[in-house]
Length: 64
Figure 1 (cartoon, rainbow, N blue to C red):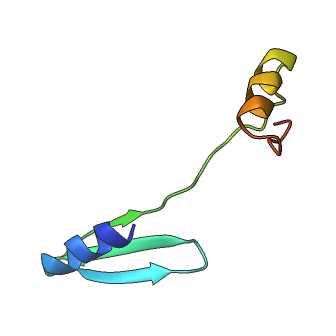
Figure 2 (cartoon, rainbow, N blue to C red):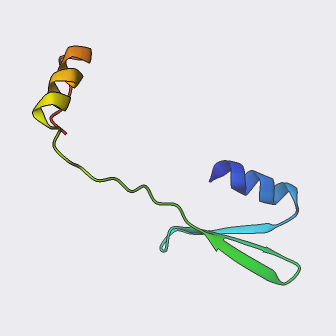
């Protein structure tokens, strides 16, 4: 997001961060756009075979 913001600033966009909605708003020449990022993940337990491989790589590997 930092790289995007810097690139937009370099193109003379006005930027505003809405911390409540967690979005970046950019405007130029009466037009606007907003951006947001989120990280998604799914936590799942490794199968016994997967866990064995992970533990061989690193003894401290988690079960997930």
